[in-house]
Length: 412
Image (tube, rainbow, N blue to C red; front, side):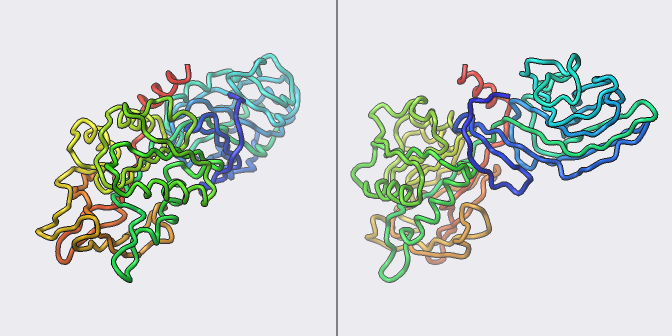
């Protein structure tokens, strides 16, 4: 297991006692089995299960065991992955010695467990290759299989845990709103809920990491419209305690290297379409490698720049219809016409604390249609009897082996 890491916490519903960062987008999680202790009788086989609730592509797996037994060579021990892959951890090692105490099976260890002595405290290479699990999804029920193949001596599986280094799929939140807009007259607008929405969105796309690093990118094609919105977003994230950098997009767009080391990239253009292909491509690559992306602005899906729109579509999951400045004959632009009613619906971490909230919005919103490819619509816009159309969208990409390969190539 790689050791050049720094610490942070995990908030998953699991016995995940430790989470470390190897890269802003890669994590190491420790999962403890609760299916212990287990008696190991003579000439019998026992199974103990461990559930990994987190979906991630495996890059490395270590196993840590605590077993009491009065004749270690009696034991044959195997680890079984959720997909059925089996790895032999050890068979008939330790001769007549006793116990396995904090025994860590690690492909990168310098000593083999085959040639070592009980109680095997420390790190040892297993008989099989834990690398056989690499590239598979860790999510699901793992099993530890222990067979006692001789009479007279017995034991107990006291505890075991998995230490998994992996990467989750990319997550994206699209917010088709200028977040600083105050709303109509005495009615609330998005500004009233900006901090909560940003906090939730960053936590979700960034998978709840502590010491989250966020890059806020001010798109250069803003046309001078609502430029303070990006500043307000930056200020809000700083106030919320995030390690945040505000980056003005260069004329030729951002590069892949600009995103290195960040958990979350937030691209902000309150009122104009995104125009730089390089920026779109870098964000898409960041997303495909497990990064969190937030796209904010009411013209994000506009197809004025068709190549850019096609790339962003991989994260927004929305099909563009029109820019919404006139919705069924109702003018809605720059708070000079009619106002949309925005309604937050359903339950999702991105809208935690905002369930059932509604507010007004007086600018154009891209008219789009969901693609129904795993995106979740969290808010809809209506205007009088017309609508609804999506406004806040969350999307988590499926895990792919290609994403893992791209990530590994980047590290070489």
